[in-house]
Image (cartoon, rainbow, N blue to C red; front, top):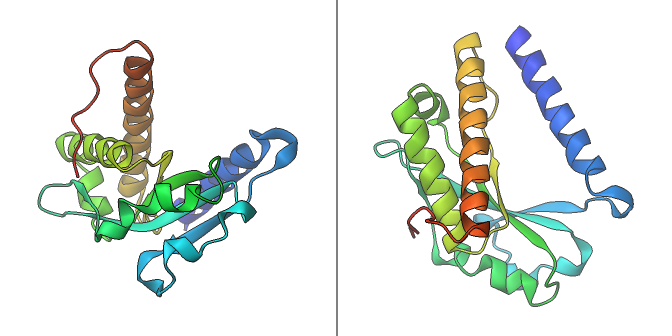
Length: 171
């Protein structure tokens, strides 16, 4: 029971931070599910500040992020036709997060591929849709994953700003 409470508290803190970090304008977000039958071109992106494109996959053998269809690669340019300032986030789902997060090498593979795939396809950010860790070990692994992911994203931003080497782009 304690891991669920801690995770929900963690989510609450993230949501509050996310909402307050944008100041007066607020955040209007939505998920677009690729297999729901609504084309991205039908989204009225003028209604949103952030749109989550769901769901990229996690390959359980390689621990790399993969896109399930070509519609993901066109998502950002499609929704930005109506609203050039909308932020798009690649939402990654899958039931193999506990195995991936349990080892430093598999976390690195996931992190590097998530950044590369997001950048290659024009996404502004990333979203992890892990339907809550179930054990204290999984909570610790999630903590490690998030810390390492944040450090990798910060390093990528610093490299981009300084004209340095970025992670190789993967499609």
